[in-house]
Amino acid sequence: MVYGLSGQRMLLALAIGIILLIIMVLKTKIQAFLALITTTVLVGVIGGMPLLNVTLEDGRTFGIINSITSGFGGTLGNIGIIIGFGVMMGQLFEATGAAKRMAYTFLKLFGRRREEEALAFTGFLVSIPIFCDSGFVVLAPIAKALSRATKKSVIALGVSLAAGLVITHSMVPPTPGPLGVCGIFGIDVGFFILLSIVLSLPMAIACILYARTVLAKKYYWLLDKDDKPYAARYQAPDYEEAFRMDTKGIPGTLESFMPLLLPILLILINTVASALGATTGFIGILVFLGQPIIAVGLGLMCAIFTLGRRLSRRSALAEMEKGMASAGIIMLVTGGGGALGQIIKDSGLGTFMAEGLSRTAIPMIILPLVISTAMRFIQGSGTVAMMTAASISAPILLAGEVNPTLGAIACCVGSLFFGYFNDSYFWVVNRTLGVSEAKDQLRIWSVTSTIAWAVGVVEILILSLFMH
Image (cartoon, rainbow, N blue to C red; front, side, top):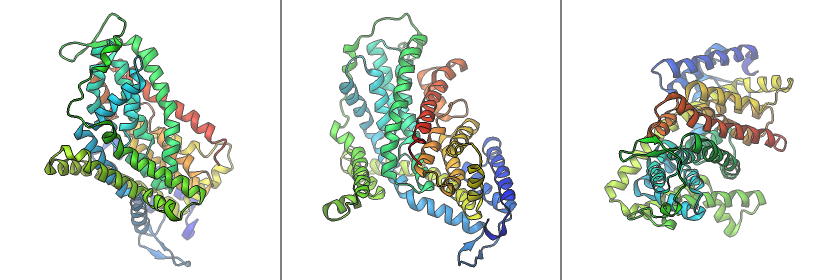
């Protein structure tokens, strides 16, 4: 341990800190960011770290304040700019109708009888730049329109959309939560995007199957003229009507998809080229353009000069500023998580716990999964759950030489567990679909989110056999 600190004392301090963090988030008016910083200070004080910065023999500065500032700044230095760009882009998608164009495109692509898949994969793509709550509010009218037109259950269609949205919101950068986890673990964003998309697909498919085979039969609900759901007698779907959606005034297909696909493509080119060692000449330029900050910035510029043409200058700026306002809390929580992780790292507690876990039969990869799952169940926010799990487990896994990408995936998967009453998205989905009974709300959404979590757990266990 550093500076003569006791590993047992620091471990006790961390346990007390986590308990107090949960109490502050659940039972008080203290916001998550302040709770994280307060927890960081308490862990340092109880653990015996110096209150004022001191200089160690190797020249390093050591102390509670130094850990907070370096952890906060180091984490946001990696991903803060990308979060800002991403939420502004997402706001333009929402304001211009590009998200609706994506839905219609997927309907045409998947064809008749595949409305659930079309909605799920619309959500799957749209939620990469747009928060899932906003995405569902924007796209839910499409699910309702499809239910009216095809006579399919509005619950099965709505849940398919909601599942696609929440899975990539929880798993795939540049969504702020997964991006923050990447920053805390210090891993390559491009590779993480590629891997998380691959892992997200089976989750989405499992949720679609649940919606189609279970919910569509148990909750065959249609909509009345006042947009209220009612239990109806089953009738065969009318697939022809699904393709008569009104698309007047919304952007074209290429215009809608380009701002999102451009940065993802550039980041993936960067990842592949860097892995092959090709970083000179024209490839070198692509590697530079594929740096996440540059790539997402180019995507935002593309959105401004294409989708933004449909808005006045004042409206475009107002929409982007609205996105920037929503990014503020995400950045603060991300930085707060980085500060907590830094104090665990600086104190030597990460190494102490890694050595302890290595002497047991428990796989270390279980640690971030359990922390994230528990935090998700206790306080509801998936972003707070994955950030907390990352900040606590990253120093431990890195000290134990566990693959950090696998640890990051585990943090993200845990945040999907059993969304219920303390989760804002639970209420957005159920209220929008008109589900009022608690038992129905749990069966319709909580079980769906847990299915995605369960598939993710299996994927992590399989990956742990190959990624060390």
